[in-house]
Amino acid sequence: MNKVYVLGIGPGNKDYLLKKTEKIIGKMDVLIGGSRALETFAEQKAKKIKITLPLVKIKNYILANYEKKKIAVLVSGDPGLYSLLNYLKREINIDILEVIPGISSLQLAASRIQISWNDMRITSLHGKDNKDELLVLLKKEAKVGFFTDNKFPPAKIAEYLLKNKIKDKTICVFENLSYADENITVGSAEEIKKLSFSKLTVMIILDNNQLNSSLRGDIDE
Image 1 (tube, helix red, strand yellow):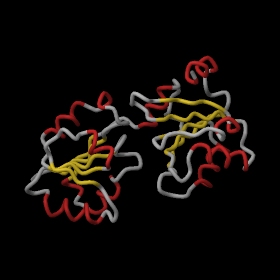
Image 2 (cartoon, rainbow, N blue to C red; image 1 turned 45 degrees about the horizontal axis):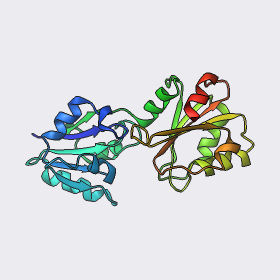
Image 3 (cartoon, rainbow, N blue to C red; image 1 turned 180 degrees about the vertical axis):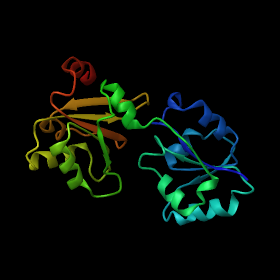
Image 4 (cartoon, rainbow, N blue to C red; image 1 turned 60 degrees about the vertical axis):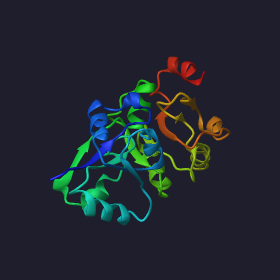
């Protein structure tokens, strides 16, 4: 029986892709993923299917074809962090799934500013309005990392924090992590609210004493 692979493809650049994942992708008949994921593996001969809503279309395709075709679902970052994994486990027989981890963009972001992330609270604003949850976390946690959404980009997040009297924080915005145009901006909410950023961003917000002060100048340059 063929396995259906759920593959974490990391933050984007293939330099951060596990060798095992790359080998599996090279053997697949079908690759299912978002636009960016499929573009990353455009040279592969496998049939490519873009993930669109409703997800039931993807589920039905997998169930109808996995016995005769080798199928992989590509997810950005790590499958265990805000991906399609929970949906696939719920809708498809778990015995046919095989999950391969990847490097999350938040994991890479933490390494860029040289902080541990075992004590970082993680959430996501992608595709949902849970900024109030973010506010609660920021009031009680020293480190909060999260995935942004185009409807609630970094500048709006900074404005929201100021509106809710959260000022004593260091905001780190990571754009296009792992790509040639990667950029990291570190600043206060007052500074970040005045800036614009690319669509591909993650953020880490820290208590002011959490970031090594010697790093700030290097990162901002």
